[in-house]
Length: 237
Image (cartoon, rainbow, N blue to C red; front, side, top):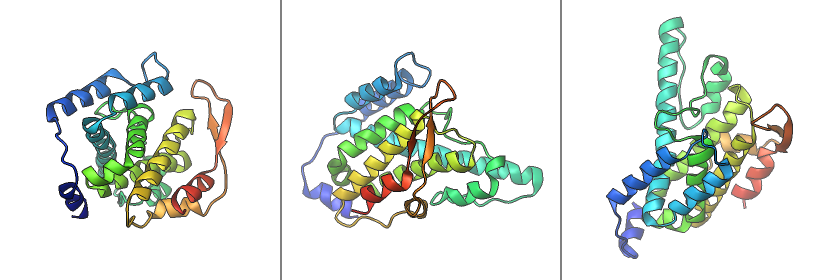
């Protein structure tokens, strides 16, 4: 309840639920991977739209909604696999790497075409940017624990998809991962007592290998990302 004490002891902010819902619907339906506008430009526009207290609430709703929807989707996939084959999978949202190592070939990555229309490379990337840029408000105006958990969960889903889920690591995915790492770093830094890092993050920190990053419109490699090298200075300093 420390977050509640911080809110009650600080400046009171008037929120407008109606405006929050309008902003969420605008972000949900006005942007997306199928838009003719460049993804980077869409991310920048969304971050401008969410640049106030109501926008911060919307950003937290986006990351939590997408993380919750992905978990629900994977539970349904695991139940369907059990019905068809008798094979039982454990879906632990604290560490998806165990699930995907075991059954990645039988699973569908849950972040593409989410039912709520929030694409990871557009709306989620923008929401992560807002959370990182306004981390001091995240820890004062909300309960930061579920927000930070959702950020780490989406990072886990994305990087595990690359490794075990046949998801090609393109520039959109790499941009999302870097923005999620930045958000986690800034929220952690704003906390007086950050929680322990999740097991998937600790596992990747111990690595030093690079992952090729592909052009989403073609098949060529346009760069590389070293997750361990990105995570260590961001979350161990």
